[in-house]
Length: 385
Image (cartoon, rainbow, N blue to C red; front, side):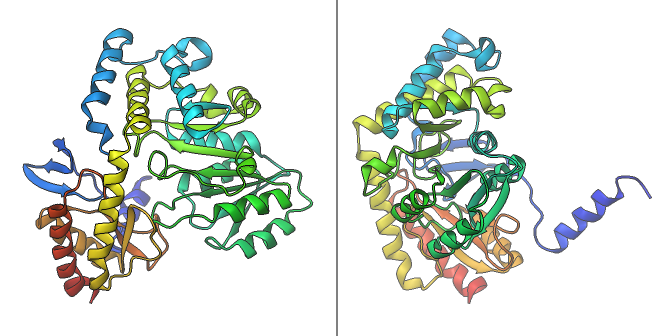
């Protein structure tokens, strides 16, 4: 048997389980429309919530900086890759988040694993929500700290879990704010109080709320103690991750976060694009208003269908189907109907909870949403009975 026979065997198992993944090459993007192999589709699974990835002001700014600085930064920030545009972006993020300072990473994944690894290690505890993003789970595992998991949004269980870690040196609670597969929201006020009572650090992943929802804490004083993680690749429409918090925290991460120290800096044009997006968001609320108007319209139209959308409170709306094969069939049916809506299957979500992950954006029209509703009604009849 070939030494790589296990790869062939594993791929066969994945296919048999209806979990095989393949890439679809997108040839063109225009607002909410995309083209794949000559077929035009309405995209209902993009994280480009405000449409800023294609905004003329954003692309113009990126083009200007591309011409000035070139395509890449050429080195890590601590060598010769630290450009003024990176520093400007960090200042803008800190101001936007109401924090003393910020630090950017090439991706949100790197921001999570780099920060968690820098803050905790052997002899410490990292406590996470069961439905946290994979980057948080990977960061917890790689840190060497004891990883403790509490049931989704269950604050009573979080308290109990923290008590079991009382003998450990440092405790770090990490949670998504908006959960990327369910669309619900972490109970931030309770989390801040629990962290304070248990002398634990609190890190909030705002990837799917940055630029879309404000991080609200009833006691504003407690927000200064929160480690805010966010991304620039979703509503901001660009690429990168960041941490915002106290000045000392950011200096510490510059010196201790391996995912920052040992990687090339963000391309300057990418950083410039993010700055342009913050300019738009801070000075014009129309895109956010359009997004939430679309969210409200979508959910109103979804209600009569009786589909299981969990406890979604945001622009992310899961359409639960359960079986992985049926979910793939539903996704393919929508594709043939002109709607691009991806199937989400294990291991991204637990077994038996495969779903269509629907995201609405500011770019969608009422007509787009009406067509989606019509086709989802057909999906329910065919695949979700």
